[in-house]
Amino acid sequence: MTVPLYRTQEGRSPLLLISVHEGRHIPEKLHDESGQPLGISDSSDLDRHIALDLGAGELTTELADLTNAHVFRVTHSRLVADLNRYDDEVECIAPVADGTEIPLNRLLTKQERALRLDEFYFPVLKALNAFVAKVAQRLGFEPFVISMHSYARVQKNTSEPKREDVCVFGYPEFGTSPKLENFVHHLRANNPHFVIGNNRPFSARTPGLQTSDDDYRLACPVTFQNVIQRNNVFNHFCLEVCQDLLKTPTAQQHMAKQVSNALAATIGLGTRPARQTALT
Image (cartoon, rainbow, N blue to C red; front, side, top):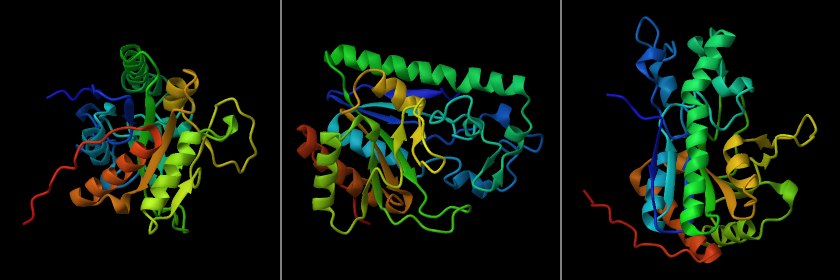
């Protein structure tokens, strides 16, 4: 069965969720002779953050259900091609990810890398751009865009665990984003037990911005093309949730409810009643 490169869902609200790291699919054509995806010998590595944003897909589903949002999802693993990186960045098709070698990525020739991008990267980014444009056309105005992600509190290459439970970030170079600030305010007020970072530990920047060597902000084609280039920077933020808060369906539903409540207070977005989970 052929897995599509992406899936879309049309909603009825002005909210658009983009989830480019939820996919875990690695096509058989990218398995080695032993049947190992991308030559990765330890299958547990495919359940780590290097392969996908754990819980991000489920959180996106729950939030879309609560808010009637439009959704764009990428189905393949970020190890195949990472849409959150520019095509000329090494990490776009990572030869090594958080200390783990990705053999079939490391062995790619320049031509083979270009072919991988032509199949799994550029068509998806083009489809995403078209989807955002179509949603804006149907609404008659730009949607409110949230880029959905999760992160590992601890990684192999970093000994210091991230203290934040949630990070909300945008493009600080354009100035303060009132809706981002308002969203963070309401999320913090309703969840005092969470450490909620504002542009920490993650943040974004435009690709041409001159920065210092220690600048932690990342340039991302997904939001640059679909937010910045559409002059929609203040109707957008990226939402990163620590994956240890998304381990179970109950936890995912709880986080979606907290996010939807803060969105309702921030942009006046109505929410559906939360779905009930049967107790066993």
